[in-house]
Image (tube, rainbow, N blue to C red; front, side, top):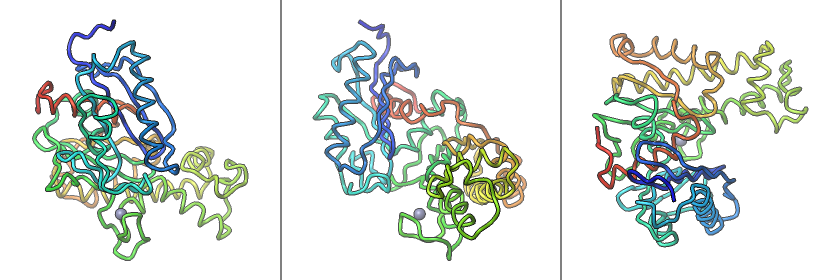
Length: 330
Ligand SMILES: [Zn+2]
């Protein structure tokens, strides 16, 4: 038996590369956590089975049964409608179209479930349990393979007409820029994500620019990742440093747009790419300051995500608690 003073929630964070399931107490304490790889290329049924397996594993680790759980919260990448529990489309899950993910999980696990976009979930996680506690107006930005976002206005997720709001990664930065997965051109994530950084590095290497980046990637241009570029930059490689600076510059261009539109108190920055730290974020904040209204820029603080890789799973759990009226919307 577990100490279940307060509600126990099963949080699920479905990502394009990993599935994280956790049993979470109502104050955000994680009793267990199970991580597995998302078999994204094997199709929908296989991915759903992996979610179920991961959920059972998290329950087992927490030494509890589904009957002791109050509800399930699922965070999923892509455009979804939380009210209808439907995932319309997801760039990270090929072949998924109009999937009633909430009902599928609800039926398979036999417990009430709630669906939310993964970056919105992460914003809620930071709001209730992380770096944005007590802040009523803030924006969460995740710099990762792509760029995701969650907008909290007056203590609530701003979800828009059909639940698709907060797709900050797809604001247009250059109308003639590279084509994005979403079909548009020159989206923010085409310039300021980990994918964009790696793409630029590969391009420069192919053009013959002198760099030690390849040495960190076993000599294989396909193995050039943001992590590899960061390692080279730390050793003083000039191309790597320039490319990280350029990515930071574009992060700042997008942040300036967000600052001018929302005048947030706080912008919380998470995602794997942000682990590069000052080398990326200093030029980002400098550019954001140069390109936004001075008064609005002076009013904003920046913070790193406080929950790290758990912000999504904790936020999915928080969303379920909120929907059941067990967490105040404040
Ligand atoms: Zn896009």
